Image: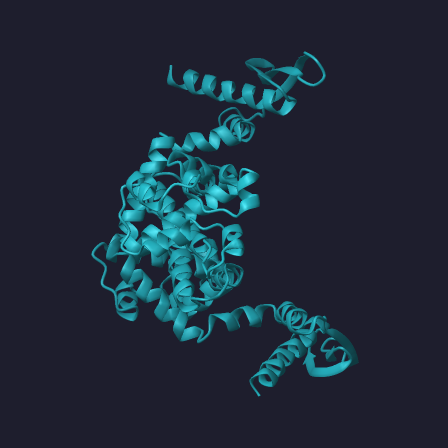
Length: 233
Length: 233
């Protein structure tokens, strides 16, 4: 059941002057299509919210990583504004409970779908920006970011550990890591891969996973952590 | 010769509290590489300025085209934030005169290069945003936009007339336009193409150009204008 918008206002600690705007932000197009009265969906607000979030995140990274080169910041920004990150933000404030969806969208669990939730989160940010000003939208989004990720740079690591490991080893060791598949075990429908990660023939780390890719990524993550530890010794 | 930054402040009617920031915005990386003293280039500011411009333009379009669907606004935004549009903005305020470039970049006319100028414009917008606040950056950029383009929607038209014409005819006539090459004349190094544009076997417009593509685009632009006129009759 969809919860009243007053509960959302309470949840996000933000009382709207224009309640229509909040309603628009929570209205999925499937709801608009089925509605008897003329109503707006959240697509235009989503368009605006996308740009609001881009600036909030850019300024946050600019201030936080005051010596990082532009290339690194671009990577962090891409990680923080992508659908999966905004989906995490939306879940963090239980946004799915407040989404207005059409019947079929509702029965197919549309209120848990990443695209619906990340779009609604963008629309919500735009609604706060229009109704309450940029500062308020900024404070709200950064609160959510910081509740979810201590260190945005780590988010990049989580997403592409093999790429990050390769960058580190090329820069610091002039060499790229190699992955050796040690074993594949378990039943056909639930295999388990074991992988070793080497640098210059030295074993760096071991990794496991349900796919070869995830086992390699797991090994790469361990390898990065080991190289960091070695550096700090 | 590079002009002093005080002249730029006068030109853009904006006195910086932190002159270093303006200096950073105008410093191309080629200048930093050659500099004897440690200096910052404009790449980090460019990263931030990109997002500032994205929001300024998004809000501008959101307010100006209050009934346009999200898809149209996304097209207008893409046209207004692309390199060539920012290059036009940079030229509009003669930004090339103020760019600090390395020697080889300077001799190869780097102060006229679209990428250098559009990057510097983004960096300048970020510098104004940090030093003077978001509102001031917004007013400044929109002044430049409006001086260059009366109607942002027309900018999309200029860039992709064939695509726009196809959309219009599919929507209003259920049919797509056809292009017939009438003639190719002139010497080999300077050919001239003539093209007719038809809709449902009816001649819509005529176009000319130095390439077949430009002749077709020219015909498409005329065709769009004619369909608009017919609609307004």
